[in-house]
Length: 446
Image (spheres, rainbow, N blue to C red):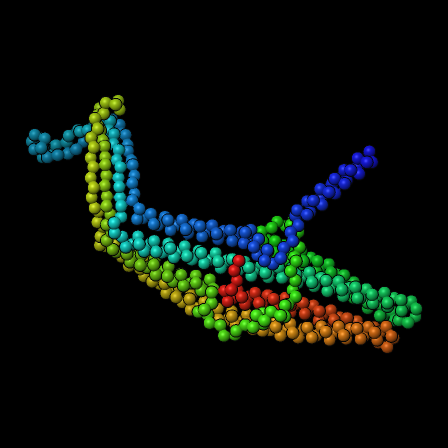
């Protein structure tokens, strides 16, 4: 019995460990971006919208395709149809004579044909739909690039939180050691009780910080999973780091003189296409005043009889081919009103274009300033960490030799921990500023 229970426990352990390994994902930043391009729901929606725009173009192009339709009907009249003719036609003295005509059973079938030969309006509608399709393509690319930025930011946020946890744990380890030393010195009559109390408070505060940071890591991972398209149960293991490659010259060489016209930004392209789209819509509305020419034709068969048997019908056919010309003359001012509305929309899009240029200039200046500040902070914090580490080692030696105070050592440890966290934040800011700058310049791509 005991052996059976043991086997069951082992099987459950193996099953649970296997399940855990399946749900665990080890990814770097490039893999996270690739997975997001495949699983992000917002991007999937935009891809469907782009596909819809493609089919909309086919729909509008069908205006130039021939239209053929088949229709037919069967009617049963309970009274014969009445027509009115001059009495002289019917051989009576009445001015108007009514006549009952037609059969009680009537059958009719027709094939109609319509082919557009000339239509400026249709041409403009096709051009407008092509511009709309191009806009959706650019929106898809824009969303992909924004997704790269968001995934990178979320990925770095997880790394930042994990590294902050590591630094806090190191600080906790140092303070725990100092607490043990303080207890030992106090028990031997060589230390003060207040030193032990101060170390105890520091250790407890750091334990709280560890717990808070662990929660922050989980929240950051949830945000990253949502962007990638993973479920919450999936465990992510990130293999990249926040280390700055100082041998990468391109990382530090950025030209401050950036020409907006040379930027490969989708928002600028989309706005230019919006202006072009409004121009095509305006041309399409103006084209409603232009004549349209269509080739039409019909083949019809019909029969009328008083008998209800279908096989006894006598069929007669009628067919024709012709040209239909439609010239709009007066529409009650509706065309003029629509043209004015379209002109106003076009003017709005042009103003939006100017406003977007101003926004891009401000955004680039802001990101460049952040980039330069991030570089300066990184270089400064590197030197600060080296100095604080040397300062902590010196005060630790002084305290161990009995010539330094516990307060000095505590201050030195706190300064070292703070500088290490500031350096980590500077590394995060520098890496993120680089990606933001690439995005602002239109250099990101999946």
